[in-house]
Length: 376
Image 1 (cartoon, rainbow, N blue to C red):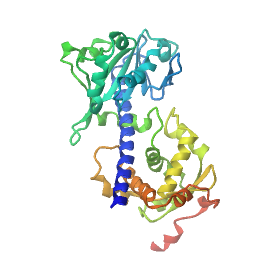
Image 2 (image 1 turned 180 degrees about the horizontal axis):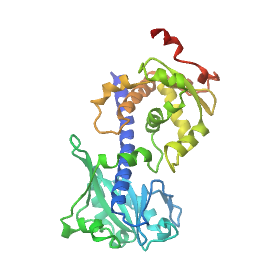
Image 3 (image 1 turned 180 degrees about the vertical axis):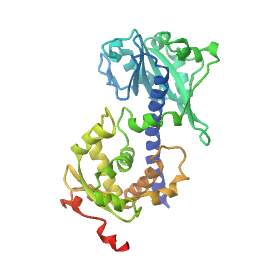
Image 4 (image 1 turned 135 degrees about the vertical axis):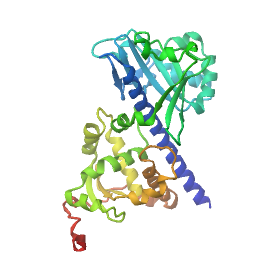
């Protein structure tokens, strides 16, 4: 029973990390859609991967996204999923934003006059954040100008949408007066406007998420593994392998080799435009797939992928997993396989899965249609 408990905790933790990361990607995609709808000038620019902000003391914080809405006005946003219990730790979490310069969000050579720091705080952490924010001095809240919003996912069973609302009696409002009246967030979210919320249906931002894929921090290995499996690996198959894959036989293994640097370049150039995927992320993710036993490490930089059509195996998770992103069923499957080995294998056997096997071969040349031609 102890082994089963350990396995279940492992799967729960892996999926929680997957879901948390996917939530941030949701939030970024949602705000890109929302702000592009209200950004009515040529100055509009949305950055999924802004540069880190560094204070004079060397403290660094990377915004989740930035947006230029008009030549005069920009937003630097940070998604906050964990709020420290200690007030000083919370202050230090925000401290790098005191170093935001208007030049940090210049667009096309134009530096905005006004920059708001928008904190997007998950509802589960809102109460703790509210206590900390109320204890901060007005000077700290206004310089930088903090706009804290609480967010939650609502109507999950019907038309799921993210809801963003100002945290009552905390912080400031947007200073977006350079936007047309009908586009101003400050008007709808002011006390005169009944502190109305911003609600963004998930269906509205699917296309942004499809190209955004990652947010501005390293994804869990499980998350990137699912993306590569669903979006990238099929393109690595040769023609005969693709024919075989269409049969949806979960036991048919289609092998090919990938090289870490080359795969990283492909991800950033073709699959995640303007992406910041690093070779280290790719290498760690491929090692993760080795423990899942859907890959084998050949050398320090090269892997063999044992690719299969897992649609049938994923179906059992379709109705089990609540909202968790388009790869959630695959994430549960991979998490289960990974955790099974984590729990059952001893340390040496587990390490063997990620050691180079030196079994280098030309697996791409195989014609996988040949064994089953007789069926026709």
